Image (cartoon, rainbow, N blue to C red):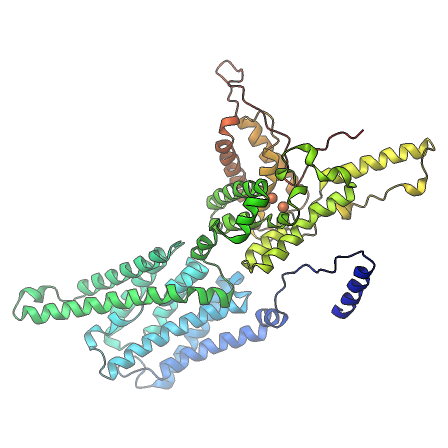
Length: 547
Ligand SMILES: [Fe+2]
Ligand SMILES: [Fe+2]
């Protein structure tokens, strides 16, 4: 197929009908995609996890619950592993759909349990004091890692099961302390590491987990503060200090390790944390700087779309930092032909569409989506940004040029009826030539950005805005998108859409504050201000009447 395409392109280039250049497209590696969706790979991961749990308990250290009957222990570990996998499959169906996520969750838990086993082994070998061995267990590891990467629910699941399986890896006398420490530290790390936006917050979470471990140690008498005031106070103070240092050090090292490994995990498992989104929101990115200089109108439009979508996402609990970054880049494709978009034209006379047919104009407008993907792939932008670029217009119609084409056709038909023109010259107006290629928004964030994009464009042509007019415009545009089926593939619920609309109206009210005419007490409109100019994003472009 590729070979024939190349020949076709070569022929078109030779005839002067093509530039010979090919736009970059975003596509996932076929092998990775097959592995990602394969049921057999998933079953192998599940079986590997259950067998891993069994093996860990089989090789558990002396004094554990099944130290005497290791076969029974392995069977018990296997059954708990299978239960964990079944619970995971039932409770986290969307996470389970991708095998890489399954590997991350189950692999993270196995690593956590391996660390527990390693600490116990180190104690058996005499490398660590028996009384402080539990302080050296990195209780925050799996819950914090999975919490940052996949959210609180998956992290809580991991915290519960590493606690249950871990109980079989520690000596019987320590089971109660281990259970308490594992649960409390796990939940603390999940709460503190939720939606962290700076790496320093992970370190802070680590410090707090360490302090919680110390407090539990003091409450349970593992760290004997009373003995410090008795005989041999120096010796007891030393013990207290070393116990606290082990607890704090372990938690801080876990947090630092997670912070350092995050980029690796994000790259391998195609995940983006809030920390990375915040780093990506730097307006000094080469493409954004270029947009600022060459397409200032588009840059301004993108900033407002970012503000609208971020506030709306915050309101419904969607990924707000992602909305902000994706909005910055959503129209990056306009950089290829900035002058064809009204927001970058200073005067109507500059409008290059005057010399184009409506079909050609629509072609140029629609091309900004594919050009955007091309630039995003070239600059190695995050795949989720590429998804938003592709989806932000869905497969909607470039209505303005479609109407113009229809009007022109009507005028031609009139001429034909008066025998002023040949019927063969009648232009063909095919709706599919005026539609964006799609796909439609497939995530909540993508849907919010698509709506914010339309609303920002329309708000600029709102004459004499009032709070009621803004609300009516938002309702109208969202209804139109729904009726057109543009949100059919988007998981936004009706309740969320209602909250999104409230947020859009509130943000727009504050943005258009200086232009809003608020009614006075007597019902008249106060404060006449300059009305909106006739600009309309890439949806509607005003054209001067031609002679
Ligand atoms: Fe666009
Ligand atoms: Fe846009």
